[in-house]
Image 1 (cartoon, rainbow, N blue to C red):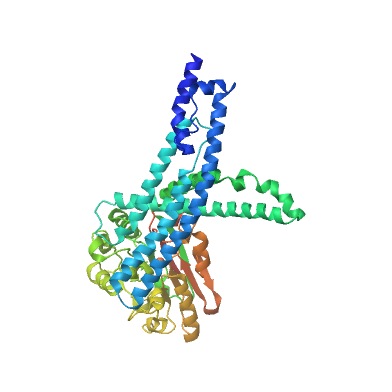
Image 2: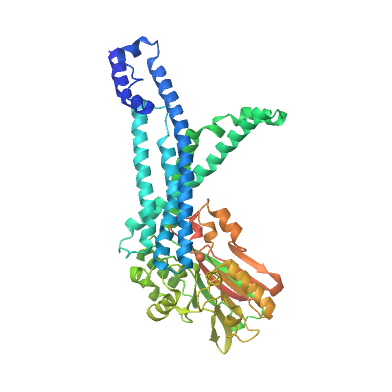
Length: 505
Ligand SMILES: [Fe+2]
């Protein structure tokens, strides 16, 4: 009876052995042969399969890196064509090559992720289970890659009322980013171990030889272990990130003391919300929830500090319709963000927000809020991206923005990017003007763990409350209410609406 079960088990494993060695049967072992091989045919069988898998893995690894180089060259060619057509003003072709360049960049990581996933093997499982898990992983990766490559299309097509499909695709994109990032990181570890082991054959440094036993450990060298670790980390951070964006927005209470604030504005409340990013992965329901939450704070004024949208007016008018329900007695004010430049010509958005949604857009402009005869100047700047893109009629012009404000009254400025806030600080130093508080967003406090270092390095102010002594100016950088692209954030508290209360300093 036991012998019969062993034969059945081996029969189940035979196809995988054929598949792994790729020779169509030269390594086929008959059940009877296996029975004659010794006291532990299953162990021997698994060891053989494992050896074959390891050899094949090494061969495939070589293939992977050649293919990656070819794909990188193709991607570079697409980029050159994109820049060429942009330079000679062939906008349609430029857009096509921009899309091809973006997709080919994605394809490089997709290829790497798929190949590494295909090479995973589970020595501790029976071959039947290992094969099943292997197939499931391959199908899973194909779906993830398909959804990832499909997701940029949602930025340029009419969006369905139901955001399930679009959000799912962007969630797959989020998983893909994590998986790719962890894989690349662990491939660097593999490269490091390979270099150390190679150097060991060339040099006889004692220190080098002493670390070789450590470097030889699977922790540094095992591609299989690294791929499984990257996969598990990506799953964990995707689920954790999705949870963080699925809960209700956090209300952050912020008390700002301003010197010489008129006593009439003591306790004046401003609801600050930035980075709504309405679009493929932020649907109407989420926008409605944000509007309701902001209104429930009963603010005196509302400040929307840029990055309203990711898309075109005609494709997503329905998703942003709740914006018109923002309500505050002293007004609803908006400043532009970099994403508001990405699709629709920004002047169309300015008109749409002002005329259709009742948001007073302050683009290098200001309003004087009056309370019992006293004044507070509320300013909005253009986005810093306009400076870099040379958008006609747009630049972050602090002098123009502040020209509407009487000198020496309490002044609050909205500047979407923290680097834009830094420009405001430089300009008010030059102009000898007063600004008490600058409100910024943009960084999403890094948004994801894997993107946090970039957000931190590329922004002069990153997240939270800062003070710039030379001009006696406070800066608050919000982590924003939402996210760009994948519906992922590090913590639920980073989806914030800031409930600002002004106090006399
Ligand atoms: Fe932004």
